[in-house]
Length: 394
Image (cartoon, rainbow, N blue to C red; front, side):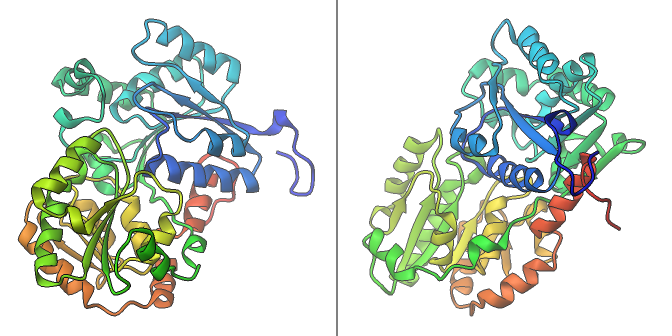
């Protein structure tokens, strides 16, 4: 490797291929791009992205700013094996980091056949309910929910991954059984969150004007894809119950997805149309969080919910499900997260009411966040070491 003061040639840069099912504007993709951007600024490393045709490509501009390329090799194509293998040969990648859950088995097997030396399986989400897998194809959902598929893919991962990473203990354990984790590089690496985005002044009045709400509105905000995992029926029902007790309460749903029409119908069924706003995907999520009063995420399952981490970085109290990843976060933020079973709308409503009465202190919240494993700098150091370009820290 070139010295720290020497220019680095393209041939000396480590080439990494990140493989996603889709490049939608979702938490795992956005966090990965933030991390890649910082790694590339500091170290002799460059990133390309491969998309397997499982969803939309919405982050072209962000990848272009990295100087990377997006390669589309649809899994459904009969030419997938030859296209993906050709990409690996032509790209001369030293690292393939696969992120499409169990499909990592296929990705890393092909990477091993092309002699890619480092083959990383990263899991951003717990498996959850396979019948609700985020695929647009009924056939694909059927394949992914089969026991045989799960067994084959897990076996391929076990054999061909040089490193297995989960963004939380639950994400790791749900995909890669604990009995398989010994004797290999298999570990939890938390994603970090840069606090700089949350050090702007809160635009409380501007956000309320944008959505046509009174200046004294108390905003419950939910950030997440419109998917079964995010449990929007309970979001809406709990918000209705809180609004019955406090008519200043408003609900802000930030996100989009394939269940947009379903969520729109649920809004009417819950009778909250007059107090609820939906935004679709936004690039100013920190602004919306800073202007809100409480964050709400009653998910059915998660890996490490990035939206919760962003809410904590913004100094918001959080009301969420009592699932393992949330409890894993809560041990570092014991006074900031109130939990209840995912389906318990009444208890969530009670927690929302309590959270709305908490005193917010953004400066103290950010100081506490900086002392946790979720600090962005820690992620950069760990991944730099993993990829063999950074300094190993104790």
